[in-house]
Image (cartoon, one colour):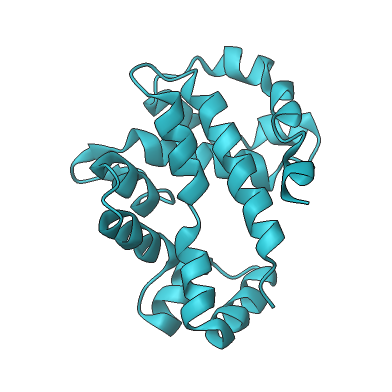
Length: 175
């Protein structure tokens, strides 16, 4: 029930968008942002490998509008961000990537705002809403996170059409 091709398309697309966003953020390495985007959902893959039946059940409920983090926490005792950050830690990725994966749903922590997590939050938003009209995309854009990253929101939103071109070739690569 897990679509591995869809997983990789999403991973490559979020990685490409993360790299594009990082170009608008000072003191953020675009390649590290790309890597963080590539593994942002590795915890979801791991969950499907380890507890596939439960993960598919959660997927069905999330498709109906439930919050994935809440469903995973309550049903599994952990969520995909925690699983992914633990895996990144065990793979000895830099702490900023571990933190980015862990805090991608809420980049504001007691230790401050996690830049890569903010980049992932915006990249995931853009990925999830890429089929919407540009008006809808801009209206619901997570501006508060862009501001915390120091992004010139006007400039970024003005060039938002560029993200449509970022995923060209990904399908071919995976076929």
